[in-house]
Length: 237
Image (tube, rainbow, N blue to C red):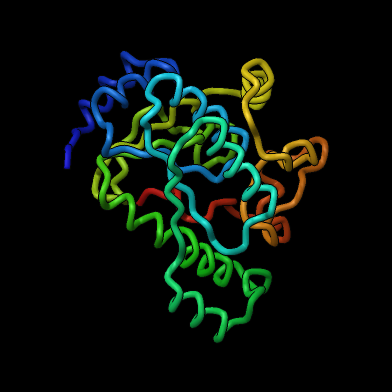
């Protein structure tokens, strides 16, 4: 495993300012022990397109929670065909899912924040931790204006929650309008839920379209009126 210091990360952030530069550096220094995590939202579509123009052998993985919308499965296949890539699909531990559902029911997440976080942990966080344990870095589609938890994020970060590997956020300073413009200008395949007002895409029962004027993450866990709209994948202790 490659180990970076905070000083090295700070130096990278002082020199590298664009998504293309960040992904070029990542390709040259971390491939093949780096991969893009994708939930197939708009940001993921953009980052994936930029990555493959730099290195067609970049790695990609996604978390199949067992509760995804059909539209997400559709875009998975569309992306495979357009870019001719191998997509690593990760699944939750069967025994953990069975025990959770047996004890708390299929729709436990509506009952409490604690239950919702448990479901996210079993279906998303645990599978993610397994693959990140094999990598020197991972690439995200995070943007600063998505949540308060992300407002101080930088292009390069040390992910102390995953052994100190590098976390690369190439479009961290992009706006929602920039994302939409890139998709249109570059004819990028995207999740059709975006056309129905979904500005953030997760599991089918936990995501709805956002309304005019709402925060871009308002559709995630929409029944929770307050609190941080995170599942645990991007919470760094």
